[in-house]
Amino acid sequence: MLNKAGILRAILVVLAAVALTGAFSYGYYYAKPPMHSYVQQDPLQDIKGMEQKVAQNPGNADLLTNLGNAYFDYGTSLRDGGNPDDAKGFFAKAAAVYQKALDLKPNQVGVETDMGTALYYCGQPDQAEAAYQKAIAMDPKYINARLNYGIFLLYQRLNQKGAREQLTAALQLNPSGDIRDNIRTLLADTTEGGAPNYTNDVEPVIFQGCASCHGPGGVMAKAPLYTYYSVMKYVIPGNPQSPLLQKMKSGHPVKQKAETIDLIERWIMAGAPGPQ
Image (cartoon, rainbow, N blue to C red; front, side, top):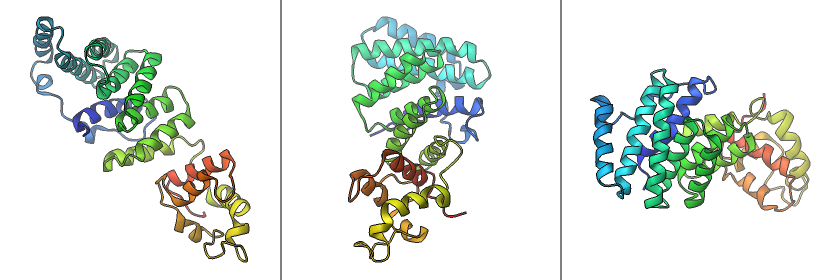
């Protein structure tokens, strides 16, 4: 079972960076989880206490992870407070401690993902990408690894196709409402110039590739695909499992070009807007 606080910490810290740079159209603060009690009291004093416990038990992976989380959260509070340079040092400490925890207790996908985000925030994008990729290899169904990597690809690497793949995979994991809405908003940013236009972009490829069989007189005339409303019988807006898209990907009955499938997928993920 996913740890909700951990998911929000990992995901929303990345969304914070996007919001601060103006790339995300709205803030994330309404959904930001409360800081741990040590942040509300005396964070540095509590961190020192945790450091002492780790020094006494250097082989305890859980203590190391907790210390990494403390560094991570304090770095986040500094970043939120407008001190990104000071925050980098704490993110670097978090990444180093997370790595020690992973050395002692490998295959912790949540720790690997958090380490990726910490590495990103301390200015090590290549190492961050490697951590995200390793986390996804550990557990392809771990949603915040997919989401964080998708955001990283979109805004750090400017790789829209790669970002769309990761964000689509995250959406297929059925996230909760707020996260699902954020993913759909992010997916819209993976399309240059906005969502494909049905009349100018989608309808022509549907007509050319499908209407001969799915139009009047065709062998599949009982399942027409020559109007927006008939097409929408096989489309679930925002859902990559839409029957139309899945049929195209399967190559049945006619193999579609990769760019055609990509176009239809972007249109569906953008909400399948109709004729304008």
